[in-house]
Image (cartoon, rainbow, N blue to C red):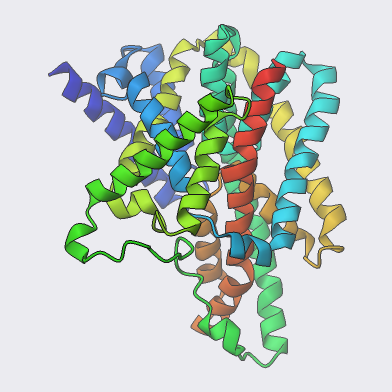
Length: 394
């Protein structure tokens, strides 16, 4: 009975966060609300192992992380990345701006380990937060375990509204541009399929629908994850296994072994994501009011430095790459959250700013591909690499 109670508590905290986010049109992030509920619970009556009791233990997370990283590869198209190379460059250089300013100025204000533990979640969201948390625990650096999670939670409070603001300004500019062209869509703009939540690839199996079951999809994702881990072990983990999982996911998707958005098609993506989020929030059980009071200043300062570095890089590079600085900054900001938040925010802004369907289609055509590939390049690829490298620097 205790297990189902624990599971109920975890899910209640999750859906309350989602409801608040929906009511505020994503200006109050769901992860922030859920994290606050967990912190209050841990500081009062909630057992420290409530997430483990809810079935989200370390074994589940080990499976979850490798399969989700393979899944991220199925959201990517090398063709689309090449076509949107400017957005990829802007997003990655924005991340470089964040790291540069945090390492140069942040290490002058705070100690080296604090900055190294906090920067990856600032440039890669949930996956980086989890990798850094597990890495810090494995190295016995327990005093900093709460820092990556807290950074991930708090930067979203700033990141979502700021990205929305940049997209709204870009949307207003594009509406004026559209009107100046006579309010007519080109053939490419009219037929562009930006409403799909993943890029398309051909499935090599071509089986009848009754054989394309969830278990078949999960078996293939697990097989790719297992192959990735085995190959990583052959090279003595010189390349982090998580990076190998991501690369093998991209390759499997490109050759049609895995379909687009694999885990969503199998109907388990949300289940795994809730488990991953719950496990990340469980790390907040080590915090106390005094610990949180000590790290909140560090987090706020590093978020400011990170966003400033991202802004400076975007502002300088926007014109050479043929973008407005607002669009360039929005592309860089995708590193804070990635897919699907970048898709949701762009869709919502386009729908809100546009006054008719043609304007909305025009905005989506010019903003959505840049936001999607920016998020994929940073959160799906760069964040895993950055977290793997930074763990070796602690």
